[in-house]
Length: 438
Ligand code: SAM
Ligand code: SF4
Image 1 (cartoon, protein in one colour):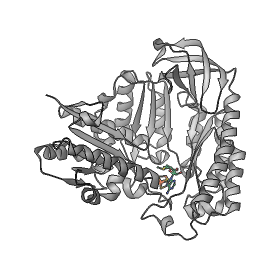
Image 2 (cartoon, rainbow, N blue to C red):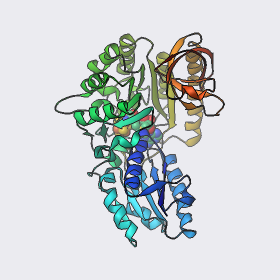
Image 3 (cartoon, helix red, strand yellow):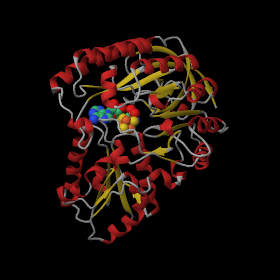
């Protein structure tokens, strides 16, 4: 009987991309995909540790998965991703049922480690932060039959924002070779992928002796079979004039940028070591909107950074009102062990963080709804991805990353179609079909 594997992915798109590589290695090694962990011989949890809550969620899920060993002693259980990197061998001690701990830069060694683990009796923590990440392995044929795909173009981060664990668990910035990325994108496009999202913790600091990020976008734009290009996540301090000009000239580059601002107070931005001011951030938004009128802007923001006063928080709300983001991912600051912010004084009490988060989210809800309603009556192109969350209609995304639901007709799945927007809510839009592009 064939061996089966099950992978569960938490956290960011880079983890999803890594999970694809791990799946491919498992399938090359003779495993078939299982639809539930109970049916698998190999179970892997790919984790995120960027916030305390994500780490707690990962550890409690790992505990539940480890209990499967009681029913199936031959099961191999592995944990990958940022929690694996951060906690390493400690996880083997805490979870006796765990066999493998695999850091994000050990995916290159996974095939060999798997072979040894299958022979039995070996528990391994592989967490070399200088090793080979999944994205450097190639082998993208695995991703066929998709209409959207991710390509990780660089790994790691050199910025060391004072609150962030990423540089410690993902290592220093390493960019992939441009030719390899272009070959991967072309191959995906020839397999039917219409939209590619270029990924990196700090994607716009992509650099190679032959090309920087704007050059890479330009070259991707020339791939004939590709329809849409996106990228995430960008850092405001690395958003060069050349990159902003890409939005003016590259027709395949989608009208959307995710540009985290984190805080609206210059004092807090400095304590976070972000490397820009609120004024600089707002200037960048102005330049982006000049280069590509109507561009959607989304962002990440935190409340309750150590020492954040009421005035600092009001500055954050003020920036949100001025910029009018299309959407925001908002978080309560949480201590991450080993980061400078975790050692700072003047921690904000949880109830105060929650009250600030509620106020911020309420403000953003109104802005998002207003922006979505402005689209009523507009004719927009969407890439149809499949059924909507509730399953009663199909859902697709506009170039500026808004979800549009429309009639349930599976002929349109994976197609680029035009719809007229009829209704708008906070979460999504409702459209009616106007035309189909092949
Ligand atoms: N590289 C991106 C940037 O420069 O903003 C962010 C990547 S981080 C994985 C995703 C988001 O998690 C951050 O933008 C930040 O808002 C949030 N985050 C990071 N560390 C956090 C912490 N200690 N507490 C709460 N939120 C945090
Ligand atoms: Fe973390 Fe992003 Fe700052 Fe890097 S740039 S340290 S990933 S928040």
